Image (tube, rainbow, N blue to C red; front, side, top):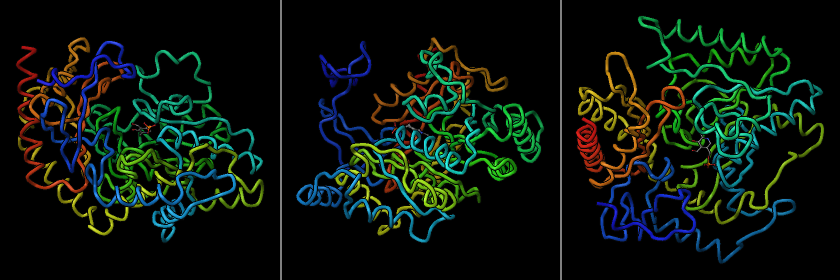
Length: 451
Ligand code: PLP
């Protein structure tokens, strides 16, 4: 049981009722709790860990940076790890992206994307552009801008009345629940493109700043990939009305799905992309946006400056950690491992769990997989939320020695449960087998507890 490793009392845990579990140490893909229990890290927190925990090289590089420059303000100064990190990511100007803005969290990154996209149109003289379109069942962060974009009912509920009315939504691309019986991907995609087009027209097609979407929806939909051609169709609608395409790759990007950018596998280039999580692998709070040349050109001709900034922007310690993580990923060709181990993880999950009566859908790409649970496989009816089935599964798996990331509200923001599996990029085949075996046992245990 995990109950003997909880911290009591905790003055800082986000829950006022539950107690956090104390992790004494972490190494590679394992967490060691205060009760000496070993947990295999099947999710790296919230899909964050990319080169394992306590990597010696990253620790050494951060230590060196701490002894060199620990902080400067970016209004005037820069530091070599942040410059080198930007150069490494933007080498060859991928898809025309040519500039980076580093901050401390995915939420800050999305706030920056919102502000920069508005500033772009403001400086272009298209000041009537004030609206954003995102998708239902999305999650884009916990600050007010990201929350306003997010289409996850339960996460928004207390804040609904303070969300500005410039934020609008269309359906998510959800092949499991959104696609009609017998509908082809092509027809489904054109239906979604028509819906987006209609939303542009309803709001006034020249009032839209941008369409914001995660290429693979993580926390809110459990690694939901889009049908082929979906993002190309969305790009075409944006282009038709001169709006921007903004990708939120905070969770699915930075190599998580086998290429540095998730959009590389969609053959669509965004105008702004947010990154975070696996970028720094958990060694420091670091995230950012990468910006297309066409936006940079407008700002260059006008204000000459992005009208935003943070005290800890491009923090040298976080950037040194992220640089070290990204160098390791390159040097050890870990994206190849993501693709190889990701294929193994997907195959094994299907093999072991497709027949389970409560497993509705298994989906994902690279080392980013979701399992959606249902009470009835035929009708896809979810469990009653009061059962908290996803959490029961997560707890059962944890008690058996593996950490996975739970999610609820998968169907409509209130009902529905899923778990996410997103291990470190250097995971081995044996570890994948260990994770799948424990996940299977945990689902069986949790199922028994509700019947
Ligand atoms: N965007 C997406 C897609 C996310 O999954 C998250 C966090 O889970 C965020 C933004 C917010 O990132 P952060 O928690 O680093 O603020």
